[in-house]
Length: 157
Image (tube, rainbow, N blue to C red; front, top):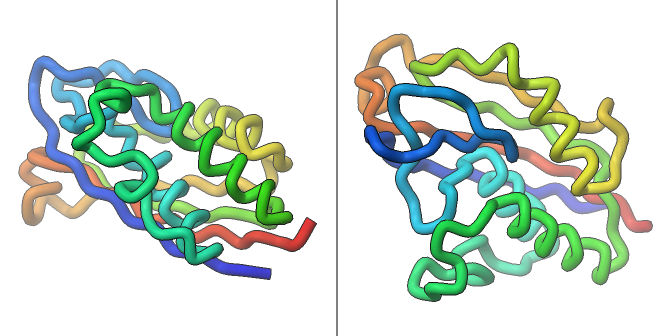
């Protein structure tokens, strides 16, 4: 078995869409990035890549490559999961935390878990997503940014 840790952070701004966990959520501010900026999927990708010592998401999908401009992060997760499978592993489980002040995402968590479990070909029970605020402190509390953390356990298939 292999364990990986992932982290991602992005700015928030008006005029951008808010994609999280592979779904679009209505929000006053959207997430800024080269791709759709889905911090949760990016953190999960980094955790999987890290577990297998394959580098990070920026190595595989650099923001200097225009072919990834505005790409759906579900595609990135699919490509990373293909790498996991090609190395002979499957998802044991994953646990993630999203840190943001707004919007509240609790009503979307089950939809996000479904998207991720389908892409990673694992049981819904193996995908955990939690959310917390930053208690109005720092750039997250001022609603200038969003952060996600993920831990993934990969098992030899």
